[in-house]
Image (tube, rainbow, N blue to C red; front, side, top):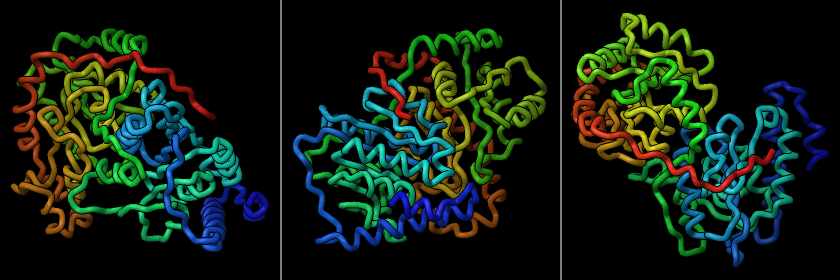
Length: 415
């Protein structure tokens, strides 16, 4: 296998990288097809000692999928549970009680197949009993297959990646949200499964105090309402119009005496400062706090009374640290799909609210969203979002969120 990859190495060329991956996967598929008996059926070893959960996707996916690890912890309380993530996502899951080790996939390993193969070989040497692949991507399918685990569960991907798994579950099931679909992988195990739906990120008091000091130094009064606004998005189709955000923030300042904190990361400073200028550079609008990584963002969200923003990673992080959220969804997405928790503390507004729809059925009726994205986004007006805020904010502002328990076991990063 190593010689095969070496002969097709990419030398950094993106097209060659994709070709190498396809070739490697095709090679393994051939091996799988030739194995006696074909694809094996799952048979759990008792006791289960080591479990690997693979989530090679974005930050929000990793946070929403955390109940998979928690459910495995409750089902196999004595097992070692490792979570395989991209490097920019991994810091969120250090010190988490349901994750023993974070297996970090670096950017360099993603770009260079031979380096990624070395990562897979290290995984193989760990001798996992169970591997759950939460996305069924080419890289994760290859990792699952070469892990050597007796039980490997993934989704029935339309591109025929079933060769990588001992069992597959349906990729799309009507009526299930994103988390519920991923929990199908746990339910597919030959064991009396205990499902845990809640997800949280464990934060330490020292890092919380550091952020508390930064906020106070910026002039933020933590005794007054503090609303965290996430107005940026790395994907343009998930960005509510900026002028709508400006209107909504002005309403929050005038009606609730709220202080607005605009979250931002690398490359986003100019955008949030432009929004602050549109608000008239008010003293209650703060752009001073840059979050350098996802863990800093989690500590910032923890100290706020509510996060309002696009359907992106910050709102998942806020929910995981106990901060209430109000998400504004792209017209391409029904809120029921991406809101595992939909209650008085966690709300969403989507195109269905603008259309007066009671469920996600509108998504099948509106077929020209991609071609008319801005038109449909502007149907989700500040008035619609403000009406939802009026129901959420008064009870939330009576008390602060409970502190996150910081007494979690230490989780070490595995290079």
